[in-house]
Image (cartoon, rainbow, N blue to C red):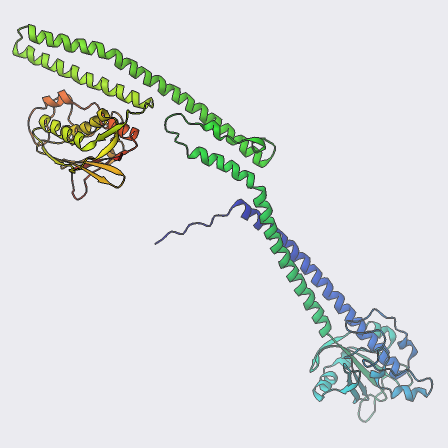
Length: 567
């Protein structure tokens, strides 16, 4: 099952997201407040318009001057303060004719009534007129269903008002007609004389007599439409503002963080340097200019990074100085040890040739010569490593690696006659560029390692081949192999294997599978520098040395591989 990588939230993304979320919260609160305020204002304007229409209709049909003098509270949505040709009735109040003339007027003819106004006149419980002012300015009859809704919805009893004070504060009711939603109010009961009628009851039927109610309603679709348009405008504007803020904010933050990217590049350049050894120019990658001046966020980061890099550079210089002193000490000590070791070997040879020794004395002298020879080899190895660590380039000449390998196998088979040696070298030359003596030592060390650290009878196979731009040398053995935990450090200096592959230099242990004393092991005991020289020399020639155990295609043994660039 594949593991999902976590989404990386950059600083720019988090900053822009926070700003956008904060702005969205502010716009949401502001939009809700504007919407609520606008809705209350529109409802209030619609209520005032309905009450004004009620007062005008009552005054026009009932002839009450007090009703006609109701103060205007502002135009209603979709209404005009005065009638216009083709949209409202242009009839004017009659100059004479008495109360009966007023009583018989159609409320839709009231000056100033807006388009869409609904008027229903109910007199003594019967509908006298039920009309609506159309868009063309003509009166249209209401449907029976709308009349029934207006007369039976209880508005006559619940929201009627008669006096000017009552009409000014008259309660209104919302009714859904076939033409749409309406807000409706009732003026009445009105008397024919123009004053509010006192309720009288017929003793036989129990119904009110000589009472008139004028139901007036205005459409509320315009209010709903205005509210919807306002809400859509707020939502669209908020979305556009959030989008623009996100895009511009992301661009601006990315632009502001460009100097931080330069600081990051400096840190990445230092991280890519080979800090493990050698002279490393850390100070060449310090942050320069204003990017390292404290006082700003980026300047503080650059200044702190410069402090870190300076400390690293000082530590590396101290390390390099210590390593240089150590290399010089090793080189000097090795040079100083050459003369006494040569003297020891010379005097031992003179003693063996000039004196008659007992068998025990001759054996002791042979051991002395062997250990002096081993000590001399160790000194030479230390000198070679010191020269390579000092960065001295090898003397490069074109060398036939096949010839070097063949000679090394001949020497190893003579030194290790108890092993089986196989050689596979191509007939054509395998030419590399390098120091022939150092390359010969590389091959000799690999074969010596296979001979010393495997039991007698082990087959050692040496293979040389060309693959692309490289010469590849394999040294395979079918011995006990190398433990997995030792392979990583096998090419380190003074690395030692366990007893399964390494002989103890004391001579007290026996070789695996032989049962014979390991006197030769004491003479040729490992110094722990052979494979370290192999890796150092190969790396100095631009190649690499590796080990695999068990060897490919087998459950035991080991394969040492050296890759060198072809000339």
